[in-house]
Length: 291
Image 1 (tube, rainbow, N blue to C red):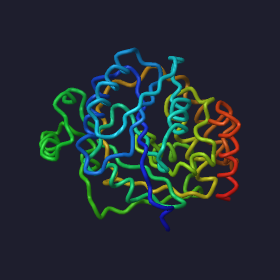
Image 2: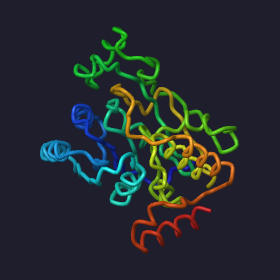
Image 3: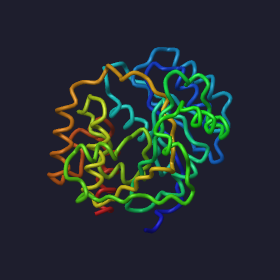
Image 4: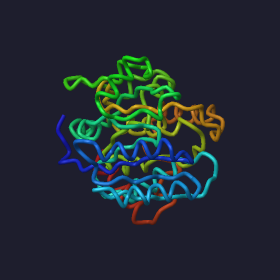
């Protein structure tokens, strides 16, 4: 497939009251070979400690780090991600979370694999919770942790430069669980115009996980394909106990499945319902142009 121009990456990191993992994640981006155009920390209602941390790290950074915040209304990452995407200056959006430390080639890999007609999901290895204090994305440190069995999903922790993506289209998903296992917004890259064309995340989803599956369903229905990498575009998830703020996932999964099978391409409660008429017009024009 052809590249859709030269990508410039705006990195969106969601966070909620976890300065330990957020600090490790943000600090790791300063050590990357290729850095993003900007980082936008999308804060879903954290206390003042998170803002203070982001501002302190921003003063030391060689590239812009911005903090956007919304009131804590339980789980509402769809809304804060939409707000981050609207404010992004780059033409390519890379989305991840506070607890996902990037491999040193993370941004470079995403930019290299950005193609017209595709969106990208990368790989995730897991750092066991007892060892996150000592973790860094230095190659020798990662290798030592892998050998000591302090990282699980170890195959996903090792970057293979020539690794090729698994390609998926809408017809490859027979149920929403198979899409959910492929589509994780902790490691997601999409052209901003494609994101706008489907009106971003559906903000009616106030529960953990289905918002990325539902977005993927609409992107697939627009004819885009998923590029799924197992040993490239890698992040290291700093493990923790499961979040408790999420609502019931059953309704969200039903909605995602209905949208996938129903051919839905535009969010019913997307970013344009909350933003200005100009944003809605831009989203609709992007949708028309990509048909």
